[in-house]
Amino acid sequence: MGPPLPVRNHGNCLPTDRSAIMSNHRNRQNPPQVPKLSEGQLEPLFRRLNLAHTRRIYQQVADRAEKENWSYRDFLALLLAEEVAHRKQTRLQRLTRQAHFPFFKTIDEFDFSLRTTLRQSLLGSYLGPDFVTEGRSLILYGKAGRGKTHLAVAIGYRAIQNGFETFCTTAAELVEDLSNASKKGRLQETLLTYTRPHVLVVDEVGYLTYGPDAANVLFHVVNDRHLRKRPMIFTTNKPLSEWGKVLHDEDLAAAILDRVLERGRFIHLDGPSGRTRHLNLEELLPAVAERARISGIRVPEFPEPTCANTGFFATADKCFRAGLVVRKSLKRMVSAEGIEPSTY
Image (cartoon, rainbow, N blue to C red; front, side, top):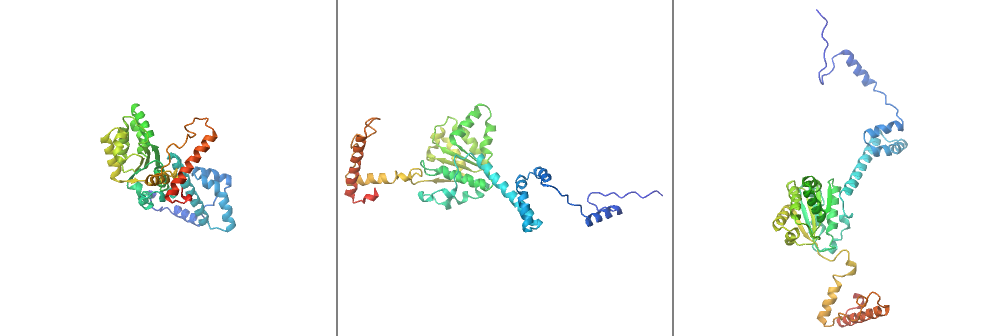
């Protein structure tokens, strides 16, 4: 009778050979020695694992851990926490650069007191991750200086903070880019720039004149993003009823708005311009003119030749006299109204 056949170890089966069992037992009793590596020998290991930040702070943390008698668990926990925090911050900075924001603004910097039609609570659903996951969209409408772009940038940046990608462009840049790509036969390739990011911000719809295919190329972007439930933010100074004229196609403009607003919201921003509110151009001047009309005391439209209409080389004397005449007229007007001098 021949020798017994050796027992093979298949898959996860435990070894039955006595020598293998004894070897495993010895290994448990005598674990392998931890190699003593110098800082220079650790460098390649950190690089191989792509732990750039850990590589930079390891020695400092190790010295602190030794000085304060940290446990191994605490030492490892701090290293991992620092690495994760650094990667999160690095990603935030990278996505913010790639977003191509015209400037950096946050929602905390927006002055809601200037906008009677807007409260921060109305934007709550656009500041959380649900804004992206549910594919909501937004159209911000108002005159220049009402904070439309500020809000669009702030919402886009909040999406980045929530872990999503944002891309910001103007309507003119988008239309020109896609129009040129269409002429060169690269439309589908170029569309990815505007359809791939989680959030797309299209600024200044209606500010400039677009080519005849504006509605066509914009519809490609909106339709693709609508089908994939990817949010869009538009800012515009034109009423929605005028988008057909702006885009040179009433039907396509209606189709674009229909898709944007199906899961979106339209917000009208009113109030004074945020850029020139310190001049009170839209509050004080109309009010003074209205009081003058009611009282019948009006400031002369052309009280004296001014610097503007006496030529570039007008004398300082004429400018001074022109200012005196205007000031005297204003004093007569406010005196008739009983207004304190400090209010004008």
